[in-house]
Image (cartoon, rainbow, N blue to C red; front, side, top):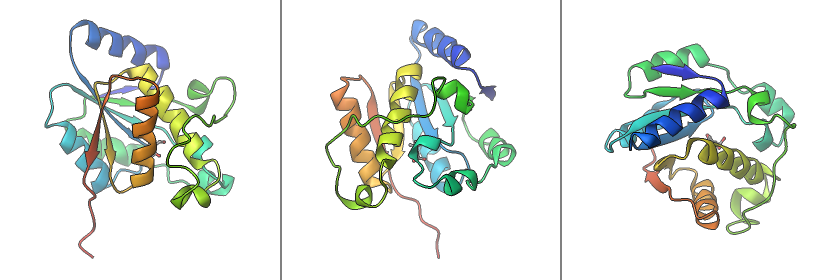
Length: 180
Ligand code: PAF
């Protein structure tokens, strides 16, 4: 399992995989791995290709700075968990790497907005679509995996992919719940 921190390196890897006609499966996360994330990797394993898990706690999608600052940093534990899966590459960039011109989120998706979570988390989905767009543009996966648990997020990302004419298959993964 390779850990990549630089955009230039992930870009090179993605370009080489594409050149060699290899598919890329991207599983975007903010780390703090749990069974739900692992089920996304398991789903990705059903398809051909290299599995890339991105770990990036995206400041642009937090409404409260306190929530961002208190978000658990479990990188070592995450590596341990992921090393037991079929994940070949971890992309774990820094904030500067992802937002070299400062943290900003742009509103580009208007569908599925002003309802549900969006009414209570001002700017959250702009932060999500901004970072997902950056990741998709950078890695250009054939498939990207999201849980249906965050259904509004799923629909908004589906719309992002449609709007940008991206040739990416969005794979909806079932919710995983604790037995209790
Ligand atoms: O669902 C999440 O964990 C995040 O919103 C995502 C999609 C990784 C973007 O930061």
